[in-house]
Length: 323
Image (tube, rainbow, N blue to C red; front, side, top):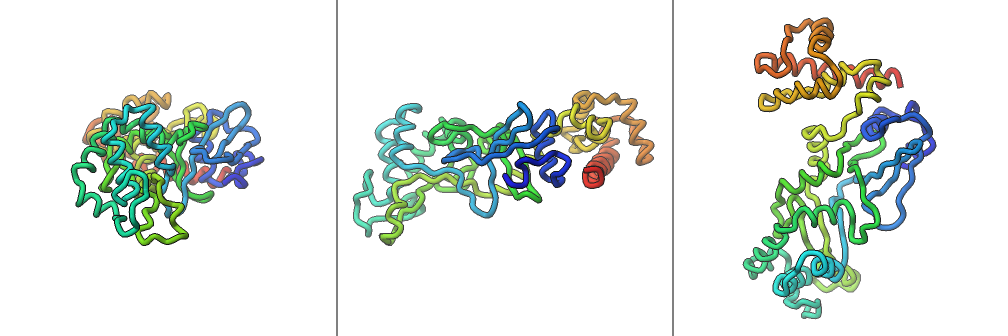
């Protein structure tokens, strides 16, 4: 990713990276600087064009672990910031160690999986879950955005490769994770809360992995794809689109809401793109020969779907041809 962006210009990028830049920068003109963040930061790369700079957390591959820290560090954070009561503290420690103790010094034969722990101590699991639910947004932000050291905060979340990927704002990702729940034994919204490795068989090579908290995002790729499309969270700004395509009629068409319960939002959408009803209807009547006279009436839903498909196809085609 860094090599594909660093010291390049917008016009030399492939369509996928052009979309990434256009979706997050006010002005894409100029030499692109892209650097990898050193250390354990949530913002993996920093991209700068001129004086404008943005940070991105980049995910790829099949791995879905997004956070890891020592149990001691996590407990200290909860005590200092979120009024961790002594019983809940002990329950969390017992869950992570999984050997019947709060310090990990129990016998190897006493080590159990999270599922077994849940069956043996359901009330402890419920107590931990109730506590996590009270501070869910704060925990998700720590796990996904700021990290355990608060050293760097990513603005955008990107999943994919140089050739293909999905981009969403971090705020929309946080909202998504808060509103959905995982089916794990313990969860913080859509995120799974677990031990990194309980080392149930006591292997010497894995013992150093005990005593660590790990947070996973199951379905990471599919969720980011849904967030980037359903929330429409990252869209090119009107000024930049007009610079690239000379008008914003295609952008307005591509951004249309086509589901029945969201059709009313199209009035505001046209205003956002600086497009009047008159010019919108005239443009698409000419291009598609459609009897369109409303962007919010249910009778026009099929026409709006056709317009959206046409506009998105035209944008993609022009990007490939012109850039």
